[in-house]
Image (cartoon, rainbow, N blue to C red; front, side, top):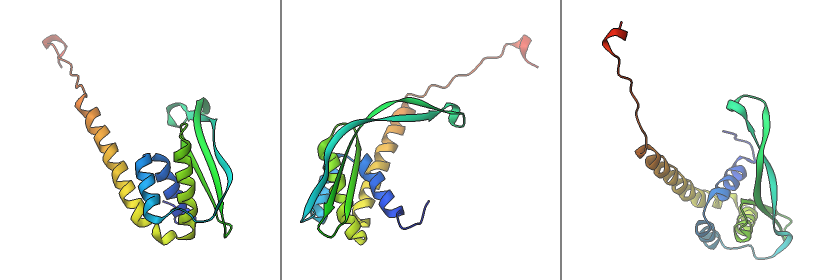
Length: 149
């Protein structure tokens, strides 16, 4: 894991992009929305090309387009917050943008917000894995006497 000056910001932007709206709203309520903000880019929806690799190590190829909503805000002290969210949720992009700006001003306030989000995402992933495991089918082959060695 990266330990540079931007690693904490990369962590929170990654978590926010995967978090649900109520979680983001409660996080912003907890730390308080920015007081004086100027929208550099109001939320706007567009498409980005996603890329993949055949077999995980082959040549890259264009897999398809994905809808993304982005936004940017500047605070009175010049801090610029940015937010990207998969899908068409303007509210989610706004919340991510404001959280990014506030946490850049006060990075020490990030950990109490990020840990519960990480925990909730891990629980969701474990639940999905549990549901998938419940549908797992085991196959076996019966060996007949004349083919056994």
